[in-house]
Amino acid sequence: MLHVLAFLSGLVFGLGLLVAGMADPAKVLGFLDLAGAWDPSLAFVMGGAIAVGLVAFAVAGRRRRSLLGAPMQLPSTRGIDRRLVVGALLFGIGWGLAGICPGPGVVLLGTGAVEGLVFVLAMLAGMWAYDRWAAHRSEE
Image (cartoon, rainbow, N blue to C red; front, side, top):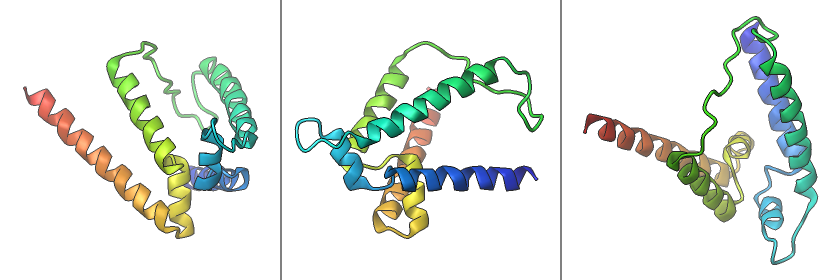
């Protein structure tokens, strides 16, 4: 049952990204282009997502277990460190160059779009490279 609920959650999330236009790189780049022909429509999508997330985290923070009975696992780190800043910069640069971030990239892959395949392969390569780098650093 847990797998069915996870699948349905992912399906609803992916459909939401499609309907909202987040899986359209041209629309995302139009939103990010503040100096050009700026398209503010995704600001409403992001504002809605932030509002839902704030409420969800507030409710989850008061619970010991999830709705399915699993223990709550919320982030415990609150500090801003170099890893966070570098990761955010890489994410933002990649998003600004391609108009795709991980969620919409997987949605694009599911639609059969070539840019989705290229993005997901590049994302996996980056994850692999980071794991190799982190393993090498921990050996030193």
